[in-house]
Image 1 (cartoon, one colour):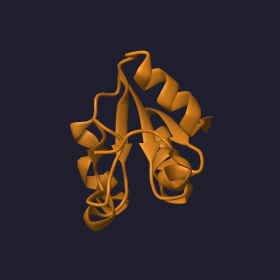
Image 2 (cartoon, one colour):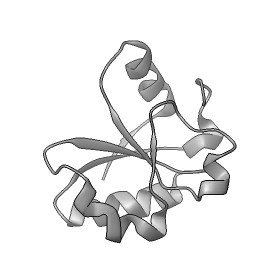
Image 3 (cartoon, one colour):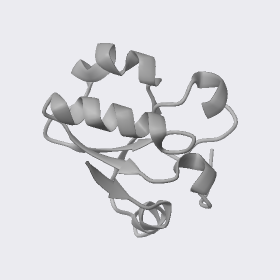
Image 4 (cartoon, helix red, strand yellow):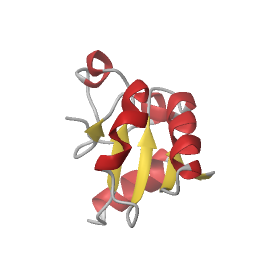
Length: 98
């Protein structure tokens, strides 16, 4: 599984690089703040929402600490999707939130 650091993702966002971020935390967690532009699909719904994802795009998976997003990334990778896990999750995120 490929990984990206929060700093590298923050740099990509500040450079204007188009990224697709999926936050797999629960809605209550996301309400406390998420990376701007991230789409919330709780981990428990990934299996049912995967058809909403474009297999030709790369997705950066995010959660609180990196564990749930890692499981989501492994699952989606096994289904043929291009995914990257953000290490450390939102606990390590120092960038802007919305």
